[in-house]
Image (cartoon, rainbow, N blue to C red; front, side, top):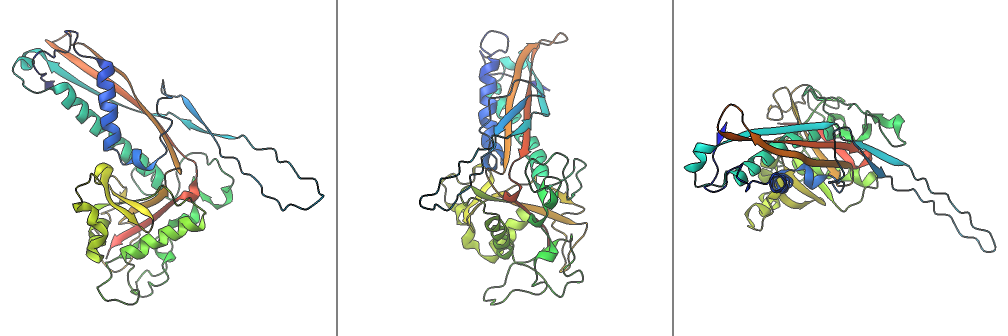
Length: 355
């Protein structure tokens, strides 16, 4: 692809800086990515090469004992174990800046290309990490397990790196009693907005707010910190939320920058709500209509807390060189990243389909 530069900004006349380009792309990437808003990415900058390991100190568990007079206290030795976040993912970009087109351009294509490269890389990271956080295999098919070693003591209650009780499905909504697949474990939850004035839960569907409240309850049950909670949903779920109560989404019209990183509501049941087109789906996805649950056509939504997953990433090795076969510069860059679930109790998923 041939890309022109603004006049006087040739890629080989000393004005193009790979270091500055890398910084531009990195800033734009972090603004565009939902993942940067919902994961602990404080480990940015500790990466040099693919295969590097970022060591994360595990929060020690401190025992509180009853104090008895005239009795010696018991001193606890703290466990200094750590998590390991392996940088095992890499993406790249490469494009050409043509010398001739550069003479006729009035646009700074370096900045423009930096923004576009950052957006595309952010999109690729979101797809991959959201699959990982929701338990989706690399093949794109939803599964209840993710490859990787769980680094916490609840191994008997896990599917891969996930707590089984936090993977909600049809069987977790007891009000749904008349569906053809009522109560079937593993099936999706048929969702429809509750009608205005309704005083009871439906017997064929759950409402969007009911589902969110159930996810919040699951986080509460797991003693998950109320600070930094989030919910990631797809546009179909957002539409049903608006149908149920448009006042929930007033942040859409605030004009205060809330839509950065896909943020569409600042607080529903204690969670910031983000919309993303990168959540995994199965079959024909969540738009599959019908009042019955689905076992192979559904979407997945995710609730969590910002400390649940650690991510580390770095745009690395941005460089430019002369194209030996034309009068142009080639700019290429590599992006390295990794992700690791640290607190499975702080991740909750729901399979659903629109009823």
